[in-house]
Figure (cartoon, rainbow, N blue to C red):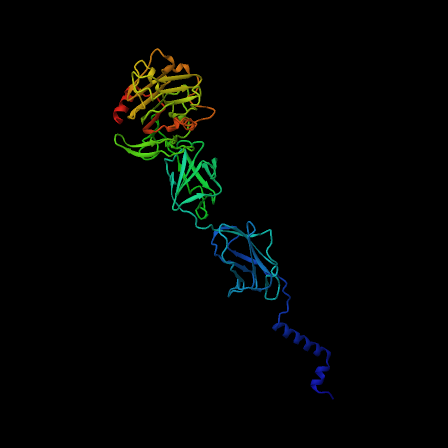
Length: 507
């Protein structure tokens, strides 16, 4: 007779049930499901595409599951071939308390550099050894570092938000001395239309110490809104650190002046700088080919004036208001003090004086060594107009000879081109001098063209002809030395009474 235990072990049904019970118990304690999913990155810091991050930044990756270091490297490739390679097994790569988070310390990065980060396959694995598949080219991780702290802007002219901006120049003053870098300065209208793109390497951009001046070849429009962009690195400090530039239209935005509506186009007091106070802001500037720079001084009779020593001259900007046509009334007046020299050096002109037939206006001395006033021989000084013809007003040829101009005394010279009456009027010290029987000295009907060079577009120039080279081209003429004060230009014809009042008010 078998025992109860023997009956249980020999019973097929009971034995099968016992085996199944064992397997169920094991399945409850251990899960042997196979994990074949690779770890994936779910966030980047810095974010892909971000700019202006610190050169000392660390990089942080967050995976979708806990990871551990594998093998291989992490590369940071900069534009231009600069590459940083980090072995994942080094201390530059660490896991946080949260094992999903990885921190990468690449060290100091290059400034103003765009980096692309790539990771080798297997640099990280999950806890079961499944490999991270590495970064892919279709979703690059890029970021750009901030530039070095370059030169800082102290002021701009026009100021940001100004409503009286210049039409012809931009100015920037920096905290430290600066130099030209590489890039462009651009000006846009309010509707984002670019009206100027100026290479910083061009002669239109002048750098002096801490100041940058940009002269515009084409003037801006009156009463119009513009903004300025400047490329990163267009300006640098003396150590090469880059000015970050302007990208946002709000960084340098201004509205130009509405201008003078009363006929006064230019008024240069010439007290301490070249500023035009007419309202049009047509500031003058020293000539680009000058061998000397005019100096502002104190004169015992007139106070602050400008001294044009030999080799120096200045120019006004180019603008339609300074391009007199053969139908436009035009006047100019200035105070002068100079000594006579030989030949015919230019005092004020927008013409090439190499030939009297060249279009434009010339105020010059001529034979000033011999003409010392009424009763002496020579021409003394002259006003030449040309444009489809030529006219010459000469001091010594007037019915009542005009006083000498180059006698080392202050005189106010005024020229009125009255196209409505077709007459030229020339004044010295408020008094007009003319010759009725000499049509070539006063009859504007002799001219059929504009009184400016439409081909070469010479600017009005002080102490030189429009080319900036006539006086300089002669050993005699280049010695012209003298003083100027209170230059005014009008786009209307001054009356004799206005000229008289101007003389008496400024004398």
